[in-house]
Length: 198
Image (cartoon, rainbow, N blue to C red; front, side, top):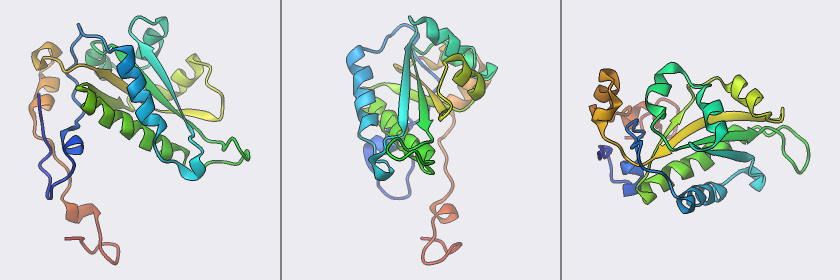
């Protein structure tokens, strides 16, 4: 299902095509080559001082640890994430490895790497849905994540699915609803804060 963004000016097709569907085909796996392409896309994200503070944990449904991550999800997410063949968890290293100082942009930089993954899924014909709706502390503990790393987001990845298989009216309604964003004038300013760019 395509839901192109109704942009106020023309942007790259990759950006206008990306959206966070919950409809994932439970019968299609993601190839190892596609997984590596997602990782490669993240690897080339920009970061302050080229610190590359991100780490990603890739879990396939056949992995025992897939269920460990799944169990930390909010109940509302479990309804549809069960169809995803891949979960990717992004972690931010809050300490700069080269000097031991706190990295104030670690989470921002990790977000840039995540965005690269989301865009690469569009290129590959896959779908991705990033989620913050999980128990971050439990996940970090269950995977024995070092103290200087914090989980930022969990991403469900797979092939586009049939909306009807969601079997939840609220989810189906959300999938069919129009994609909306605030007007450019609401968040983008010119010369001084509060003065619209348009």
